[in-house]
Figure 1: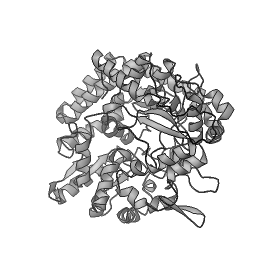
Figure 2: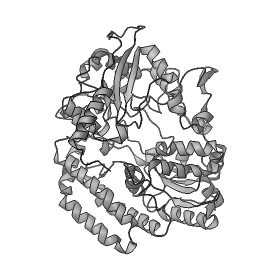
Figure 3: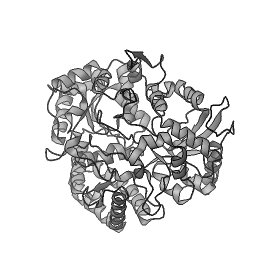
Figure 4: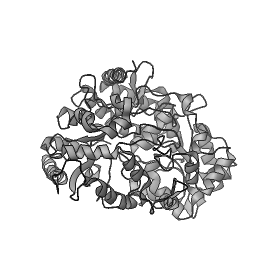
Amino acid sequence: MKKKSVMMAGLLMATMVLGTACGSGNESSDSSGEKSDEVTTLSFFSADLTEDDPFDNPVAKEITKRTGVKLEISHPVGGDEQAVPLMIASGDYPDMIFAKGDIGKMIDAEALEPLDDMIEEKGDNIKKLYGDQLVRLKNSNEDPQIYHLGTAGVKTKALATSGTFSLQLDVLKELGYPEINTLDEFEQALKDYMEKYPEIDGKKTVGMSLLGSDWRWLITVGNPAGFAAGYQDDGQWVVDDKTGEAVYKFQDEKIKEYFKWLNKMYDEGLIDPESFTQKYDTYISKLSAGNVLAVADQDWDISSAVAALKADGKNWRTYAPLPVTLSNQEKSMSTKDYGFTGTTGISISATSEHKEKAFEFLDWMASEEAQILCNWGIEGENYEIKDGKRVATDLEEASTDSKYSSRTGVGAYVWPFPQWGNGAEDSTGQPIVRTATVDLTRENYTDEEKEVLKNYDADLWTDLFPDPEELGQAPHGRAYEISIPASSDLSVIQQRADDYTTQAITDIIISSPDDFESKWSAMQDKLEDLNIESANKEMTELVQGRLELWGEK
């Protein structure tokens, strides 16, 4: 849930803290791009991190060795969503910033350096990476400059899903590997297993646990509603691919049907009663214990729990992603191809004293050399060469150690930096991402996963989902990545609507099913009072503007 206000004293104190975190810390004034024994420290703020990164793991040290750049990486303290606005208020910025959804505010404040000239003059790796997709980095029709380098991979293929409904492997095994494609089938599997096993390892069996007490409400409560309805991931919007018309998703009838189902599940005791009060650590601890049968969450959000289960030898308690929708009339969009949608990414601040050095660093991060290092790690430590091919040597460690990425650096500097994508190959024809082939992906599966997949006549989890070609490509990318002008009515209305619906829908879910219709109707009335139709109109205009900017209209 969004934070609404901060007292002035808190603002001043946070500004002082940010000023310290965003200091340049320069150790070298060299920005020539030539190899140097001197090291330049570039401050970098990432809105996605939950803790500071000391940039001292093996991959980080190797990056510094090859570039002469050390990153001083900071994060929003306590998940504070006021971090970027505070920077704008103080005028004190890091050298580089990943502002995520606040990039529009940074642009409006003229806090970011336009990159077009530098890309043209010396962005060889960047131009090679993005090619004709550079147009998708442009800000808007009114201001068609490039202020960031996109986070998304340019060449992708569906080898994994994330965010969908998932059941423990043991549930599928014990029930004889049933077909589970609808919410009713998903619900029945939970009931059948819980009746058979009311306890697991001495703990009460929990059907499905959510995390609705913080911002993760969006990914465990809000987003699954859209997935169940058969909609692609457009954040808080339902978008018509053909017309670009956007509607606030909590007005949609199919979304309503999902929450009606969730309300019934909660009433029947199939949803963890602590789903809307528990903190993240408690949630992860529950999943790690192995007695929670189902989740609807992003893989990266529960990765530490999955690693803990594997480390404890509880592989059958890990989760299988399933293409669950309201009914057989909808298709799961988890394997949809969005095309390159890098409309958020890393920017260089307009006030940085090291703009050239920062750009050279980002251009290097777009190179083949950097992509191999960041994705595969260090030869002799994380992989070896066999018959001319890279072979990962620590896949088991990577899957069981929740701190693997931060400890080794492997995968730690892929997002939110420029990335080739899991569909890309290097100059020798080898995959850039080390699990980016069917064989490599399967190699990373446990024996238990392979056994389950064999019983479903599948090689990969994605084989259970629709083929990407069947779903088509999204011409507008993803609506939630569209930068909303900070001064627009849309920005204010959506914020108010998001704050309101988070609370209203939570109340609807935990209330008696007898009250569902009246409470849902009251929520619709309140959204109208918040002028949601005006927001729908503005968002539609933004989507249509993107289609025009990208040459899709």
